[in-house]
Image (tube, rainbow, N blue to C red; front, top):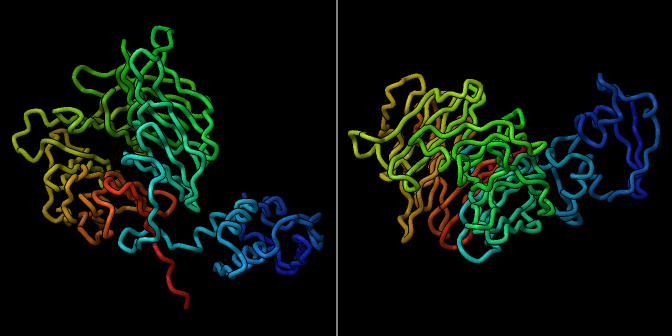
Amino acid sequence: MGIQKDIVKFNVGGRMFETTATTLANAGRNSFFGAMFDDDWNLKPTSTSTDHYIDRNPDCFAVLLDLLRTGELYVPPNVSEKMLCREALFFGLLDHVRAARSGSFDGNRLRLARSITGQAPGDGTAIRAGPDGGCCVAHGSMVHVYDWMLEEHPPINLDYQRVNDVVWVDSGNVVISACERLGRGDGGMGLFNANTGELRYKFLVTHDYQVKSYTGGAMSFNQDYKLFSSCKGRSNEYGIGVWDQVTGKQVDFFYEPFGWSLGDADKLQWLPSTNCLLVATLFPRKDNCYISLLDFREKNMVWHWSDIGAPASDERRVRDAIAMEETTSICVVNEYEDLGFMDLRSTSGSIRWSSRSRLMKGTMTDEPCYPKLACHNGQLFSSMNDSISVFSGPDCVLTSRLRRSYGGSICDFSIGGDRLFALHSEENVFDIWETPCPPLL
C-alpha cells in the first residue's frame, strides 16, 4: 500500500488540499481515486507529488476527505445532504457515506428513521428495497422509484397493466412483471432504468419457435445473471421461465407438472448453496398451497410439499414461505399467526410448528394484511397486522418488534441496502428503519 511520504495535492474548485496515498487508498479500487494506484496499492509514479485539478465542490470534498481519514462523517451546516451525496456519487464514495451514517444491519437495533407518504392514489401493493439503500413502490400499474436520499425519480408507468412483482437486478435497473390484458398481447416482463423510467428491453417467451404473450408473476434472480419468473400464457407457456438478464434472451423453461400451479406462483427464491429455485403458490391465490424446489440442471423437482390432505387445520392456508439455507429448512406462516418449519433433508413434508416462534401481535386493524416473511443476516422477520417481529438464533426465538403509531396494516416489507422498508396499506405510507451508528468514544 502507498506510504505516508507519498503526498498528493488537489486543487478542488480553487481550494488546495493535501493528503497521503494511504488516505486515498481507503477509498477503494472502484472509487475516483482508484486509478491513481497500481495493482499492489502503491501510488503510481506519475501521480506522486503532482497537483490534480478537480472541478467539483470544495466544501463537499473536504467532508469526504475527512471521512477517508477518520472513518467518521461530519457534515457542517453549510453543506446540504443532497449536495454531499451528489459529490459522493461522483467520487465513488457513496457506500462510505452510507456506512458512516448507519451501523451494520441488525433487526434488534433498528430504529424508525423516516416515513414517506405515497405519491400515487390508492393503496400500495408491494415495496422492494434496492441494493444501494433506495426502494420502489408498486401501485396498480405504476412503480415509484426512490434513491438512497429517498427522492423520487420519474415513475414507471405500465399503461394500465397491473404490476405483479418488481426486482432490482442492480442499483440502476429494475425488472417489472405485469398482467397481460385480454386481446392486447402485452404483459410479461421488462427491464427499466430505475433513474429515468426508460424501458430497455422486454423479456419474451417463445414456444414452438413463436413469440407468445404471457402474464409475468413472481420473480427472482441468481449470481449468474439468470432471471426467473412464473409465467402463465394462453398455450403451453405455464411454468417457470429463465432469461439472461444482461441480454434479455430466454435460455430455459421449466414446464408445469400437472396440478402444481408453477405459473401462478406467489414467490420465487434462488438458493445459491443448492443451486435450486424455491417456488411457492400460496393461499388465497389457490385453495391448496404448493411449495417446491426446482433443479434446472436436471430439470427435476427435487423437493415438494402440499397441504392437500393435511390432517391438521393449521397446515392449511399458508400465507408465505421462505427458505433458510443456514438451517436447511423452510419457514412458513399461516393465517393463525404461527410460524412453522419444514426440514429440507426430510421427504415427509411435515411442518413443525414452534410455540417459541409465535408472532408478537400488533394492533388488529379494520383491514388486516396477509403476513410476509424475510431473512437477512441470519435473522427471520415476519409481519403481522401493523408490526414486524424479529426472530434470532438457530431456534428463531422472538427477540424484538418493529411498530409505529399510524399507517395501518403492513401489506409488504423488504430489506436491502442496510435498510428495512415497510409499506402500510391504509394510509399509503412507507417507513424506513435503520440501525443507528454506535456512539463515538
